[in-house]
Image (tube, rainbow, N blue to C red; front, side, top):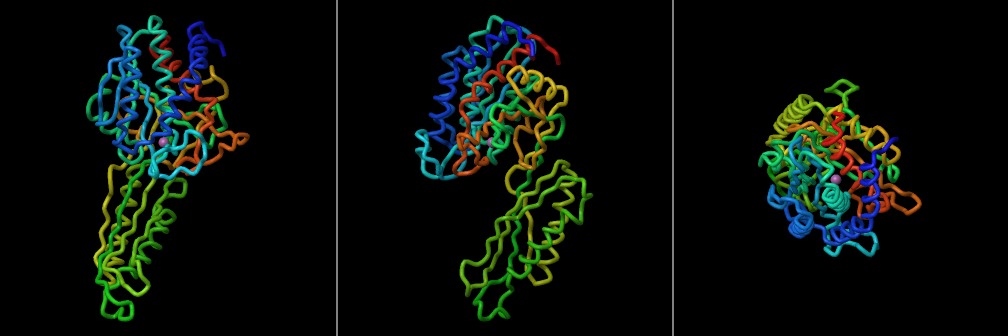
Length: 394
Ligand code: NI
């Protein structure tokens, strides 16, 4: 893969910033903050960006967008999410979370660090660039739809392409991947409530036990995928949380079932929701109970990457080493909201390293990242901006 002198210097600068990126990542890792509470993290980001001469905008509450204009040209956005998860960290690393019950178990700490590294590289090659970069440090990816808020506030109205980067535990360390078109499924959280009349378990005839239809509803939902859509359509319906009585001798008034629907096609999602509503209503009525279904929170649309930009990103990434086609995933990502606004692609960077014991999946209490390859994220962000703004192959 041929590199021009500017690309060579981007790679060299990124490598030389490796210890800075690791230090920032460890600092954020030790101080995790949940969605819309990223106060310390966003202050750190803001300070770093100001030092480099970026204009800083506050967005979506705890979000930060750093803007640097190099004169004329197009506007490219690079995105990192910042929030941690309500998980108790179980690793004994020196940079272990100092906040009980909170942890960076998805790698968003690394995302912030890699993009701050890119801010440094971009700032040091600013005379070589044209156009504008917007560095998007987003709050609340984990269920808070932070991306939606940023889009609605208009911070990205002038953006002509956006790239998001996520570390990935299923991919060998250092491999970079994306795919054309549909990549991540939509996600819709649901709450099913079956209301009856509770009482003593010794006298069920005096109650309207909601557990009876709830169990049938639970089982009926497992049949929706196989009976309602064609077998070549990716679809998941999971209802892992079932809350009934807390005692063996008490029949509850209410049973609640929480679940999630994952689909690439929103019309199929709608069809599944309708089927669940029918099942809940009629099964509950058969036992003189009332059933309801509600959508909880903001559904995430599917991530659908722009084919030309996915191809562009892979060709840029190949300057840094091995690349591959990312698999489709039923896991959701609120990067989808940006893609409804502007063309772009969601990219993953492998951080799995069996030799170092870095093998745990995302959202696991022992999740970690292979820090040795984080410089690649810094380099990739910068190379994407440089190629998109200056060389303009797409
Ligand atoms: Ni994540």
